[in-house]
Amino acid sequence: MENDQSASSKASLIDAATEFVWIVGDPIAQVKAPQAMNPHYLAAGENLLVLPVPVSSEDLRTVFEGARRIRNLRGWIATVPHKIALVDWMDELSVAARVAGAVNAVRFRDGKAFGDLFDGYGFVSGLARRGFATKGCSALVIGAGGVGSAIALALAQEGAARVSVVDVNGWRAQQLALRLAEHGPVGTRFDAGSATSAADFQLIVNATPIGMAGDTRSPIDTDLLRGFHVVAEVVMTPELTPLLHAARKLGCEIHPGKQVLDGQLQRLLDFFR
Image (cartoon, rainbow, N blue to C red; front, top):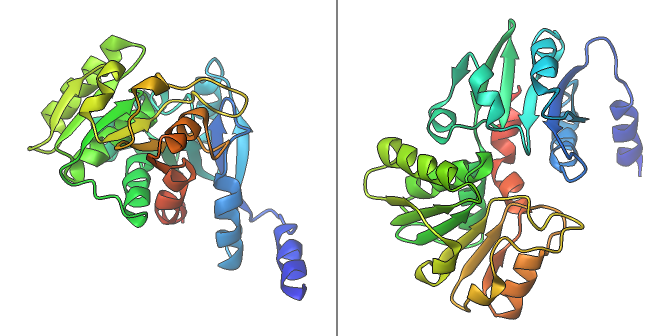
């Protein structure tokens, strides 16, 4: 009890030296990064807080240009739908962010912005911790946005034999497949596929917001699922999305979305230090 009271007391001591990281998205209700990261910074005695900040796509550029000049704002964690739009405004990008064409972490220094991408690393790390071997697998990634791009690249970097990308915007899926084929690891086959070919893959990944709390849809016709599939999510709330619920009923191995955050947590913590 004393430790809990001490932590609560320290958390309330926001002063002129406090620095911040914003997690920026629209919607923002689903984010878990503040709950995951703030206790770590607090326990380490760091005067740093992660705060959720709802920003629409229409306002993103205006908010970004102002934010990079706030001297006690260390950076942003970007979530849906801003990961791709932010790329064009970075002064410097990591290799992963450049190849995937998306960022989920932005560090401000002297008015400049450095963008990195940890979603893919978090995803494959989460799979590995739960015993799934990526090397040699065939993966169908549904969604060619920021998180889908990151996951497709990371799967290839971990030795996937084939990565097929599906998106409601077919052109975007094709462009991502071409970019990955050009810059991704040699030895992985990349293509823009179709969800109807699900039976050809071992791993199926939902890298879209479909199935988020209140959304009863699935990103793929669940009649296409088979018991041999490994089905993974990026949606964190609810833990058991309509897709995962259907997959579990069929006896598939399932991986809830929170593992994406858990897998990249240490990298995010260190990025803003």
